Image 1: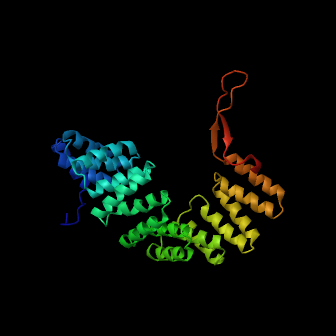
Image 2: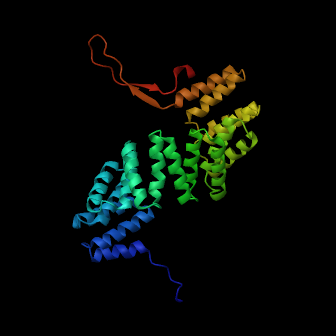
Image 3: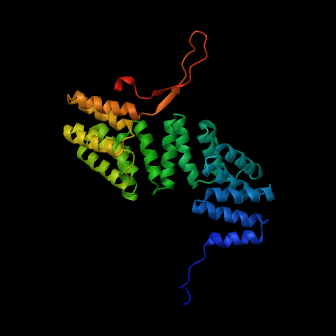
Length: 324
């Protein structure tokens, strides 16, 4: 075999071999956990970090790694316990603080999250987790002034991030700065042309404002081409088409989208509304019936009758019954 022509060794295979040779090595298990996290094997990562933490309960790297894996596995409670144990060892570790802030926000503790994330930002101004979650914390707190400041800082540090552009645009819309929001979304399209949400949100904004409606349709089409999604792009395109006075095109678009995404009640409800506006009550009734049929149900408990025990939970559609 010619030199350099052989297969490159799988790094995780090498690390697994190292763990087999030295099963009590915290360093080897943490390194393997890191490699598993990098490859998206979050459960395997958790196993390695947990074993490392069991071998050495004072290992910050093992505890923080376990927290990362638990967060990736949606175990918010477990991740919070692990990250607090890690921070007890290194209270000013910015990555661990950023993770704790993200976990607090996921636990609907936005005020506490903002405090922790601000501390992490002061220690590590370039931390991407901070820049992802801090604006969201202020949005949850309805403090759009601080949200805008945090979102602008995030975009400054992550200029190629589609999410940073989307978040700042969202905040700017909330602050009644639609022109600035549009500029931010267009800048995002330039740096991340393959992201499907940027054209979707720009199309939505243009359609809602009733401006550049032909472009709004084109942007919605572009989003759908990049990612078929659940029919939201078709809803936005149909809204723009209606504003252009192209009712037949809007109906055709909605009908095709509802056929492609039959479990999306919004498509059927909107199709029913457009048919009704066009005076076609029969088609409106059919679409409304489909919306009623596919809408998610919520379970409600009926009241006891004549002292008898409560009846079993009944299912109710989440769309109004009048839609049918």
